[in-house]
Length: 230
Image 1 (tube, rainbow, N blue to C red):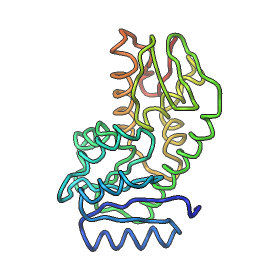
Image 2 (image 1 turned 120 degrees about the vertical axis):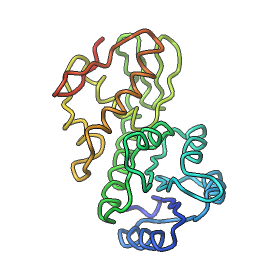
Image 3 (image 1 turned 30 degrees about the vertical axis):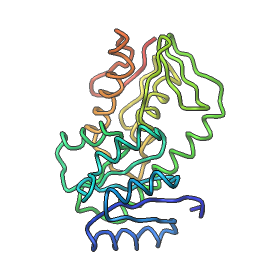
Image 4 (image 1 turned 135 degrees about the vertical axis):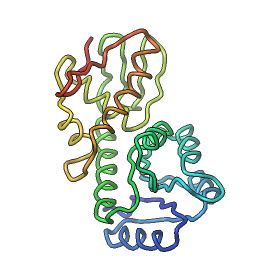
């Protein structure tokens, strides 16, 4: 991992914080850390990170608040949420706040580092893709150079994960993308992602890309996957 790859770890449990820090440094990550939400907020305002690992239950300011505020300033930096909660509603709240991935405690450190590497790899691929020309699919316009998305002339704000999924669907309009392929393409083969997570993201995309414009372009083939219909 490049020394320029800077990770922010925000976790208030001293023992878990120390274990994560040790695991990340063993993988040669360049890590800054904080135990308090307000301190983390100042660090995020001062410095550019390539990924942020963020606990939800923090003193000062919780992780969901931090994630929402970060997304107003930076839509691209990947955020991995850590929490003791594992119910779907809690995951939806995390993704709705702008998180890219979600890990429920307790977890294996190996799983954490795999997910982190998947997020960083996807970010690198997105950067390369941004050198491409614009993508026009019907009335949907994507500018890879900025990861900007608009429809009918109106800008659409997407999280990095939402953007990645949409880009995968629109590259070949009308072509079915199986759920398994979508998971492997977006999260990586080494990461175990529940299909409910994909469904949550598809629902977010429909609420942003389709419904405000009276469209239903993102289609589901039950039991198989998704496709974008022009």
